[in-house]
Image 1 (cartoon, rainbow, N blue to C red):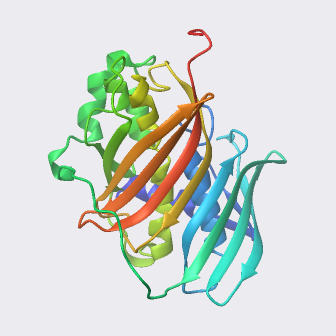
Image 2: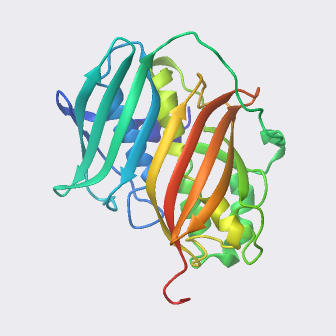
Length: 296
């Protein structure tokens, strides 16, 4: 296991303050706020730690309420809404400086057999044939408003091996195209021992799910994103459905598209497939996507 992945697992290992109250630390983000995927993953960890054994998350719905302060701890309070025979529901509020910054509702289910069908996995090249982030990011250094962005981005994502199938938005500035994007991802190292927990694999996928989902919105308009300085944005809400078991340390295809953008908001939809074609997660997120005031 890499040191970077060990660090991420430590970030997700919340301190229990009271029976249903947990405290998490933060790390510096690429923008002056806590990375949304971190808050979502930590909140889900908090919910998981109050659920009866044998129940895994099947869905979550969340709202980002305020920017998080990366220099302060986050307190997660869990409400035990319901414990049924098959389903368990939890609500989590994340608080900093006395104010809620994030709200999550999650539902858990015991394993059941039932009817099955799924969409087919879209075509995508093998992940090993694609360049790594270390190989492609330095190519775009001249496009970024800050030449240190490649190193900062690599550091922020070091726990994850994330590979773009095609050029990322900052490589296609000024060239509007189809609102679709694909990335392959897996953790930078294998999970074993106590870390090899099905709930942790789900929480790690939740962490990664916020990294690239709105890329498809940018691609539709030929925008490069915050690092290029032609977009101001932030996540507004986030929803995920977990369909089938998967491992976050094995290659997963994140197929993403944007069906609409309007009113300063863009919608991103994602499907996550295992390498052998199983649909394991569905994701939807809406975010603020605006042109900078100087451009207006």
